[in-house]
Length: 300
Image 1 (cartoon, rainbow, N blue to C red):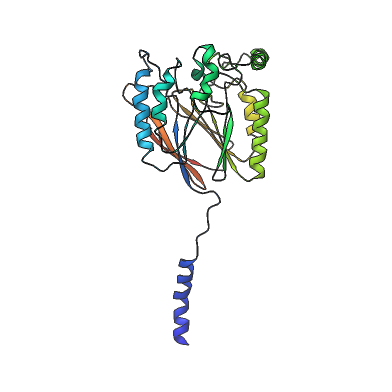
Image 2: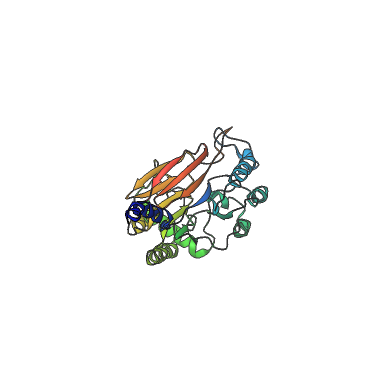
């Protein structure tokens, strides 16, 4: 009997050690993120080195392929101009081992008007905006060119663009520039529907868009960013908003939502910029390359 009681603590320890650990509510996984590759066969400016873009994209693909990624996403402005610029990058981009997705940027429409309807096929986009559901996350990919001078392709969208621009002009907003754009009413309703569905399914939500809605500068924001923020603010399921467009990058946290503007890939003579983002139950860990800094972002 004494031997039995002496063994009880040991048996309890063994039982605890063999007990299965609880599975996290949200599983770990990792993605790749690139912003503003923005290639064209053009001479450089003081800050943009267009011809270096293919080599930088190849470097990023090579590095990202050494990691197990659920997917890689490019946050818009895959090219700077000229439709044949796509062909230079597509074979490099296609070398990614992970799934790959695109966000539409304003420069992706810097092609002849007759070729703009062909941009989507070149970028392997079935829809201009869409969602990806993986690992109990819903990733909402926005089209910030929905209403714009460069990306509105139908008469209905062009009329909505003119209407929104006139409506906002009275506010004298600094972001009402032709290189920015806005979200149409159909897309705004779709976003609301996606967030309701995510809430119902107990999914976390992350947004991807080319244009910022918050940051250190507001002259590059979506035209109707206030409308989008008013929707985001209603839903606790939203955890982050990732974008490009502002090549210097920025970061803001608002009500527990992380608004991270990734730096442009082409903006230095000898460096680059891209990242891996690891998703954990309680945090997002950004591993930056080149100009993109490392970050640890707690999930509310």
